Image (cartoon, rainbow, N blue to C red):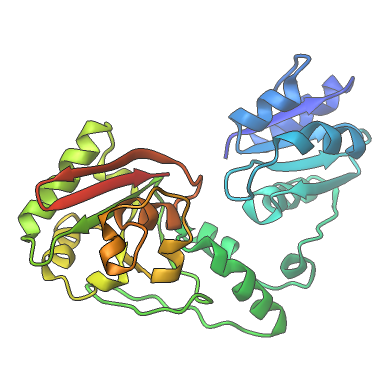
Length: 286
């Protein structure tokens, strides 16, 4: 985790914290704003009110915002104010090892429970269906939640309150295809799309399509040959995505490639709109 330490008139404390956290001190008038955009963790040696006012207009989504931890100038207390499950609590625990008192407010951590995000972090993985974490973390508060590891090849049918963890990646590739399209045509279409955006297959978090393609042998084989993970998205989720309608309206969907990619994308940004490659359409989101 890339950590920046910013301060208001406390350079010695900032340097000490940076040394403990293997971070860097950022000193300039817009240090907090700059660190928020360029680092994964921000430690601020200043009043919490200042931090809250400065970051308020910058906050977007917990899955893309950095963790922000406020440290008192006397180095007595450290308070994660943003992204507790996304590095903030980890920073606070590290500082606790140097004598600071962590003030952690995330319910699972405060009660000594596990969370989806921390399980993912321990295994170097990422939550694919991020909206599921609300229900699953709530369940952790009520008791133990089973964790299953499934080594493929396999097909898993999971409801919306089951968190799916996968190896980390930045991009989600949405795929649509005509019925009966050969695996090689789909595989090559995906590779061509990735190459056009200078994206390596190892940077892909997930391949997605509609649940209506659950029996599409060519699609299943193509993703397997790409050594990827295919997630099939239900109709309601696809139709809730903000995309322009496509020919998929004839099967009751607003689209396939673009909305299925957006459904699992962390930043909810389409970086390559749907492109046709013969019988295949591909879109890429992040």
